[in-house]
Image 1 (tube, rainbow, N blue to C red):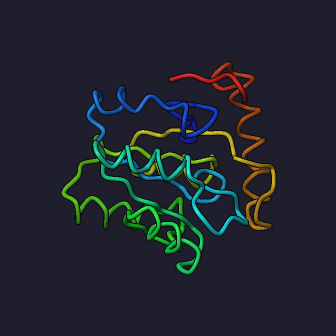
Image 2: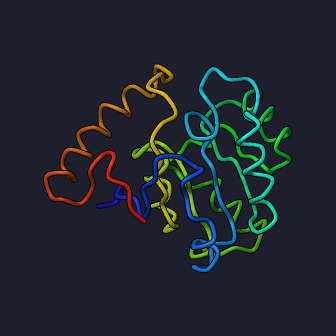
Length: 171
């Protein structure tokens, strides 16, 4: 059950961040592509910027993405948050750096992303809270199509066991 999210919401705006704070979460790690922004977007949408600005009052907010630095840095600069591009999720080398740099424990960190293989896999390997959101669009990078194919198989398996059903949100 390593890819099974702890929380499943439609998008980043539907997450109950107060509940996460009460649970002891101090750091929110956001995926970039199809979580915070469309894959072909070059700027932060105003509603996303407003949300992140508000979240930074209560949480350490970090972008961890498999995308290259030139893409990720545009968003991290605009949002004024730390970022880790080319993270190679689901490997957790970036998570180890984050925990060391900010003196955090796994129990105080949550990953928010739109992919089972990379984002939920990262959360599982790092033993952090896993929050799954629906992708912003069906348009993906070509490399992501492989993950989406595997993701559908995993979701189907979870659905048959009544553990997860696409579109049936929970926390």
